[in-house]
Length: 316
Ligand SMILES: [Zn+2]
Image (cartoon, rainbow, N blue to C red; front, side, top):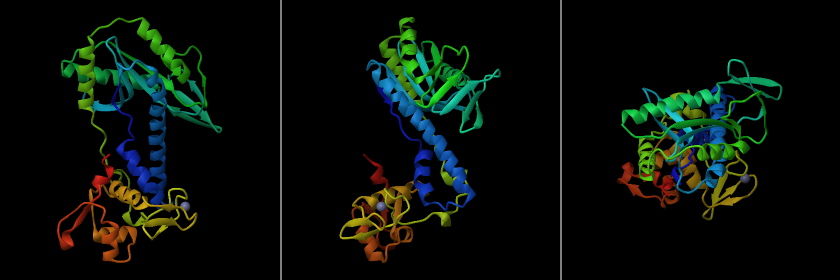
């Protein structure tokens, strides 16, 4: 049972909105692109864990991407399972290429002839365990023992590790690892206590809330406005007879403006847009045209102070 569903982080969504519109020659563009790639890898890793998690009995509580305050610092867990017998922290690594473990416990990735060094995911999981314990102790919450494992989720990964620790796994080993753990432990808390524990943790979830503008030196004038085709990324669309049409592939899309407005909301971290702002960003030829295009949105205020509510577009 999924208690905290898999979700893209806020930073991930902002980066996806801003990068296709940002000037490519700028250093900020490259920094943001690297950041997006890390977010994407993290998301794909967690997504891969879904197949495993869906094989488990329904009563096992699953929390994806839980981020909470531990001992003075925040910690984040890719997937946490809550059972009567134990809690299991699963750290996912979506690495490709060849992975080795050196004598210092560092992970060395070799891909396309290049080597990259990363922190050992089991050490990361141990820190998460310590932080989770601190959180539970601080709130006097009864918990079964906490176990950890790290999983390499990418299909194209070759693990070259002699005598790997029992909880360092390929994706295919994960289910077996879980079953072994399950069969060799006994309940420490009741089902009601486990449910209470998982809902307590969900309530502690504090997603990162940073604006990309506060992390990078984003220059607003390097962000291109307009409506773009989602098939040919950088091609503009024009409006004709209630449809948006791509200049390049001629694809028509009734919802292109909604997509554009959502991107605007994410990029500038706004819940509303005024007529003037919409004209500037989307290039509507006149104030009247702009009002007509946005007329499907809820609006508040009068005359010059009228704003359209774009936050409604995110409600399901
Ligand atoms: Zn197109």
